[in-house]
Length: 165
Ligand SMILES: [Mg+2]
Ligand SMILES: [Zn+2]
Image 1 (cartoon, helix red, strand yellow):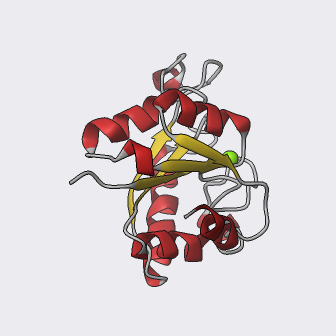
Image 2 (cartoon, rainbow, N blue to C red):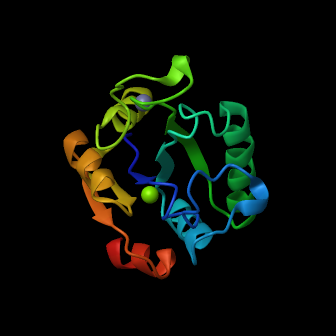
Image 3 (spheres, rainbow, N blue to C red):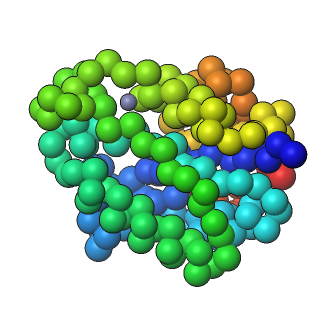
């Protein structure tokens, strides 16, 4: 059976966007974010994160540092009863400093590459799936991938999610 899924942007949706976050000590959760993931997990959704992390191409932090942060975030969400199935990230940027990640890729939102990757790896019920982002480029990526996209403008993410499902 195909799974219904929710795709979250990371910065500005799950955590407060402090620009190029990579240190665990700088992580601040958005109000109701962990609870929102737990709520949707209980409601039977598979939860994914799709995040542009050009700080890697720019040389501000490494993939390993980002992954340590992501593991911490997944553990904190698990404590609340939520489960993040997978975090997709785009490490690229056209004007990066790290050659391996400096390119015009097909995964940086508003391009839909990360969502298409998830659709290739999981059986997803697109009709009943959606994305939540805080930037128009998130919503554009969702629409390009053929799912609904919703713009979160702040406040409680749990309340926002409860209005949608
Ligand atoms: Mg964002
Ligand atoms: Zn990319």
